[in-house]
Length: 220
Image (cartoon, rainbow, N blue to C red; front, side, top):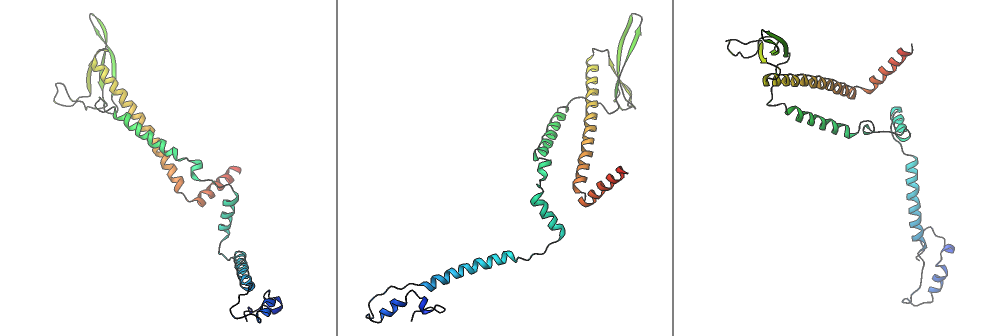
């Protein structure tokens, strides 16, 4: 009476036991084997595995030739990252260099720096007792505060070579020239960064076509 559906009587391992059970009292124990339950569990597991395999085999997904090409290259083409070409340390070094430059330039604060275009003029003064060099701080136009006049002047007397006025004025001119040179380098750096930003933001397909066309023109 416990025969599981789908199991033939002759195949049941409990067939003989059940036959003898008719001679036992209702309370005597017998041993039965739950074959069908185990087989059902095994069948369920096999069915699940089969369904999973079929699901993998029959997976349907929508894609394009471009996506397929990209997936192939990402799997086989040894893909790199931007950091392989431009390490993060590059930006850190740029930041550190800018900070160091700002610190160095700040050291010029509180020192004399003349207006751009200023220069020192050295010439010889001839007197009856002899000749000696003399120096002047010159500007392209009148912009210096006067010593006695009531209007701006174009020249400041710096006296002889060993005079502190001459020393400080010439050091100021050196600072001016150095700041101009630094400014020019920073302008070049700004232009380079602007070009780098333009390259980074340019459409890749357009960029690629330009390179291809340039190559064809060169070959012609």
